[in-house]
Image (tube, rainbow over all chains, first blue to last red; front, side, top):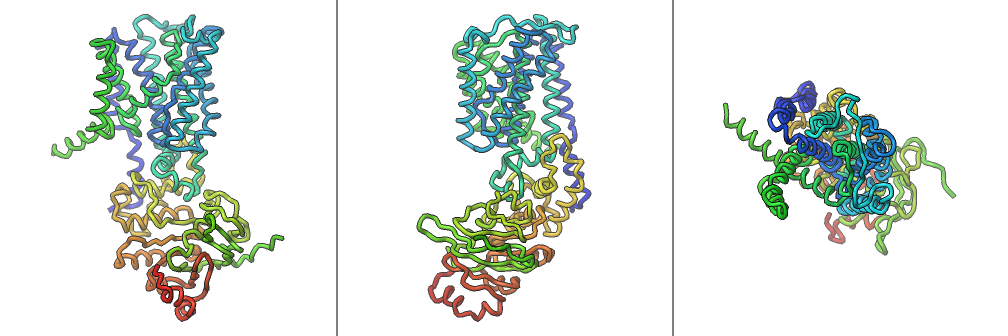
Length: 328
Length: 257
């Protein structure tokens, strides 16, 4: 039997840290010891994971389907890159400005986004991203166009840790940023706001009948997700010292969507797990066959969707619940 | 030439409300007044315009003419969410719930929205324990307390109908419009569902659409009969029971609701 007290305790228990979570974050330190020569890859995975977490907030929690989330990633990347090329090379301030600009554009776009749903959203987000892509392409005097932005050079982090060839600083920096972004996302989804977002995802039509200002909620989460995507882009620019047009490409938008679905939407860790599996698989498959590696990615996707409809994380959760039921 | 707003004695009223879909008139010259605290039944054959009337009053449809007042305030052009915040709340004939939320989460959501806390993304839900308590209280009052942690889509159908009402109650309505609250519920359970409705605070004015005349005559203090998009007659159950026009609307034309 439930009582009011246990009802409260139940909702509070949902947001408590569990040991698999703590173990997971401890494990993110392992690359420093186990695969020190792969830290650059680990850094890229952390950045992609951050990007996927930001997409999860709008797609997995608020139900905003985006095929153009790279718009904000790219904005962050170009902003951080240009700041370092033309003004200063201090990374943290560049990161903050990049995030702010991505958020500003995201906020402006959110007024359109919040009015639409489903297929219309796919077209809108895709369209906005294409606009930015071609804008960056044509402004080659500023962005380097198709040749990419050259001459990005970063000052050492905190003036103490230079961005070395091995990626130690890069991975540390990206990992800390991923963790901080994750903490914000985690806090958000266990807030009253996060609950309302899930309500919008579950039944958007019902929300006005509860007196809920759904559009304001959607604008807010879209802006927050844009800020986070901007941080991801800035990290990529700063840790690789270059920005290519690819940061705004359809491919990047599609990849992050695939990564999130692969890992599991609306689960916070889905994007992170998806990024790890996808990026490692891509690294391995492209090593085996650099030309046709998307074949294997395709196979992986079909297998996951057919056998694990809630993504890898959903499958893991199911396996875990079967396991705990069996053991005494 | 706008007439003065109706007196304080009504919580919800309409004046010459009209709606057409193309050439089909679904609401015409609808005038009625709900005094506070009554239990109104809205009855009429299928296609009489009952749900349309609820859609018009709650802002889900725009009227082609006429006015709607909540108390003395005109709300004719307010968006649906704003009407809810002012206390005019509805439920749906077909369940409109949050399938993957638990009843406790769903009702807590509605309470946080009502209190204006739902935009707080930096405060933890755990810090809103009083909202959770209130949600639990509403669910318990509708005998959903022990099911409050089950995912909504796993609830029995009758429990889902009760959750519809729980969500509406969480907004603290002054006027509650129930669109066939017992739709799809077996006859044996619908009386229990209406007992729950009858037990609601009399601060809430209730209007419900219902086809089962036993239920209507048992639970309504007044009845409005609609036919062909118009109010045919309004009165006490005793009046309506002997009104020949009502008999004709229901029986004479053989249009069963």
